[in-house]
Amino acid sequence: MNRFSKIIILSILFLIFTTYLPNTNTNSKSIFFPVKKILIENNNIVESSKISKDLQFLIGKNLLFIDKEKIKTKIDKVDFISTFYVKKVYPDTVKIIINEKIIIGIFLDGVEKFFITKNGKLIKFHNLNLANELPLVYGKKNNFHIFYQKIKNLGLNIEEIKSFFFFEIGRWDIVFKNNKVIKLPVKNYEESLKNFMSLKEEKSFEKYKIFDYRIRDQLILK
Image (tube, rainbow, N blue to C red):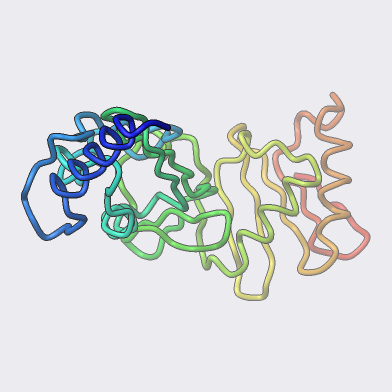
């Protein structure tokens, strides 16, 4: 590298470090790699405009020195976001790649509603299109996320379920959108569900609405 090239590189570096100091408390704007665009990706629940609005402080800042901790502080306030990744796209774009929490149901606690995540956490209810597709959970949410995952692993079509009812003795009822009801026992309910899945498509069982498995080794049909 010749002397002239070194001088050019050093001049550019000097411009970078004197144009912008990585101090997020200042309102100064950078003339070198200023952020002009904020892109939000991989989000289905959270509106891009909401996140972009919260991150407007990035506009004009030097892309090299954007404060990821400050971004984290803003994004952590959004209930539905699990994790995120910040990608710098030169010369002027900050890209935020979102991983959202997986919502599996709506828990009704008196007059209040909450979303239940795959990990069993509660999120304050918001009016979202997603809400129309989720089953309702009545009673208590005790280990609902574990119960949910077990019945899903068994192959029960969650999209066909309208609601879940939990009873204090420790058992569940499942109500389907076609108004069929499974009354599960406290223990070994997996076997009851397997039996129901083997019967529900048979024409001879179409007329029955209630499949009651509460008594051990018995199925009562109504």
